[in-house]
Length: 384
Ligand SMILES: *Cc1c(COP(=O)(O)O)cnc(C)c1O
Image (cartoon, rainbow, N blue to C red; front, side, top):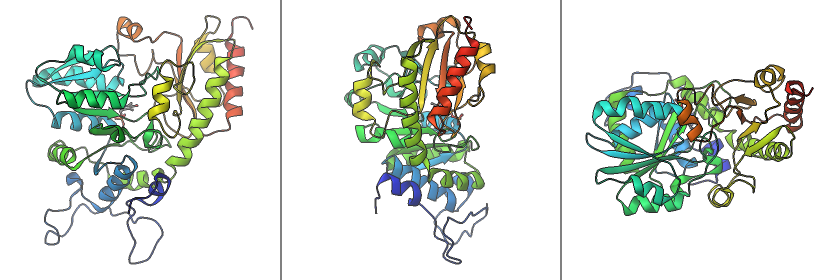
């Protein structure tokens, strides 16, 4: 039975404790299972232990897919999904502003295997069309993108890909399945860094891919060679975390919207990037395809009067730390963290200025987050 998303968060894929009737899924740490009971052996690297199967079902239900696979990191899910759909001589088109780790993976690994790639500067199908070659087999994007939250129209892109016989992958980490389900718009595969919103407490490294049976079987065939399965304990912990992802993301959506509106009016801020603001160039597309809210991530540029290192030191509540999607508010300077591996030119080309700050909004009281920002702006301002 297919439940509504809130119910799926709590109950999808739960394992029944038939012996003791405990309320939560039992944790099976076993790496060895009877070989006469199943047609293929249960084994962690075969992605088919009881806890792995249960969690894959939950994430697949949340993304409206047929099947899912859980990995030890977002990059394990991303690299396995890409490599299992590619071979020597193939070409893939990527969106230009891509998560740094994914970009690094492509640039380092693809040339060794004779796989070609291009980056599309623009977000429209016509921009992707310019990069199309006779050997193009797939398109890979992120929406909202990092760190400026550009939005790609999923329906238009998936139609363009189908017309050109390409598969599509969307990294849905920033939106989370609570705000956006790319499969509903015809996208083939959805990948996640579950280290972020799905885990939500900054204490689990994990990844996932959700798709139909055809693509998941294909990815599975490669994944059991590559490894990259998630440990049983982390699998169990992630199942527990996902029970509250709806509540967390709902609170983060609301807090981020409040903060974006506050920052838009702030004297120290020159621009705010949040897809839920009507001033955002892609607001109408975001409203069309993001159903829950606009996410808990936003960026802003501070004006020249703000001394950034002084600002970072003045923060009392918000943690200047990498990663995102946790219950606690954190922020990074993309130039120094997520986009540090890019050249100055590549970075400026993507519109990432030196005084851009990316905020991952937590579930704290928004008044406290706001006050922390305002106090730190005041302290870090040259005029103070
Ligand atoms: C963090 C992140 C990844 C990589 O995930 P890991 O769990 O760190 O391997 C991929 N895509 C996006 C958008 C991310 O934020």
